[in-house]
Length: 506
Image (cartoon, rainbow, N blue to C red; front, top):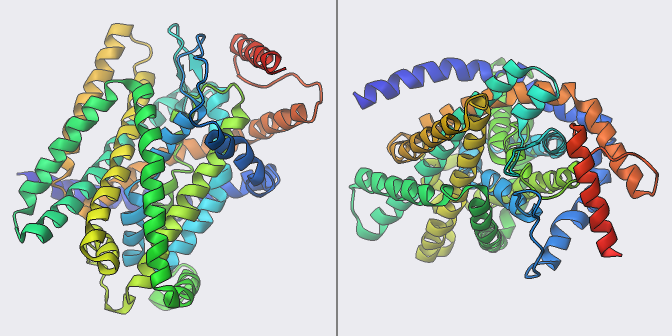
């Protein structure tokens, strides 16, 4: 029965996926980034140093220092918002997803990840700017924002806002499914290697249940608890992965030139299916690279902006600059290290696209570091995946709140509770679904979520430019009315907060 249901899901998904990840969507993703890059005068380069100077550098300097609690809004710190967002982006896509893209699309897929990330830096920036500009504050002081907010209140297409929110709920379930599937696959493989046991299905399901229970415990506390957990785990897991991958690449440093050569030469492979830029082989390279790139850094989905919108900052551009760094860190650092580690560790001629991506990812570590590598990977991947699961639970929760926003508060809370229960249950179930199907389903959901978001970001790109120009003009000392919120009363409140903060600093 279960197998029959999965078979039907696979057939339907294959049909939808072929449309969602066809050339029009790929062109839309790249086109959005190119348009924003031109209109912001290549902001991801011209203001990259500032994105570091105003985001991660002062945050690292301020670690351990106590800040006064903001009594006017229930928010999280900029770093906690960033940690929640980066925990949603830095997940299995950065390790297993990159390996999967190379196995199915070839080394050239890595190049298209870089391309999507370069333009994705400014796309993510624009999403954050719009997210904070159109976010709303409820009577309890909670700040909420996301793609569905700027679609509904910026573009003023409420129906499309509801569609975007529903797609976000589906993407949340799909994203958590992939993460749990990779956690269970990794730990069951480690268990079988340690015990020589073949009963992996039982181990997978047990792991799925454990992840579901742990997720339930964390998400009960809402964005503040999610932010706290993410801000503790993200730096640790990222640093551990970076150190291990650099060591592995250095060990195989002789293979670095050939690995880089493969990435660039295979990115433009015109020989497949009769040749030409639309040849099947070439389209697969781009599709896999773009799909995994979007899965990894989420630029264009309008997902991480949901976490960023809960930030305490009043300046949309400041949080937008966090988005620039977020995509850079996710793809140009983490994904690139994974790709180089994989390509320098294996001879691709002996590898098949049918190989299990999570097992091959583990082999990257075990082939270089032996049993210790297997143990480290069995810690790193579950941490990457778990933080993504809890981040996406929040995204799905806020989307549910938006969809049922017109209901009474009690009914809205009930709808959110139902979503959380379904989310947790499906976490356990996803541990038993085969790897390629779970990837394909989530690719489809991600593509559906990206469509309304990208349409809106292009339509509101002029507003992004205005808000950006306004911020940098004020930084230069020009007397300009701050553009902090689309709603006059909230704009005035945020303006007062900034003035108060500036007076206190003098």
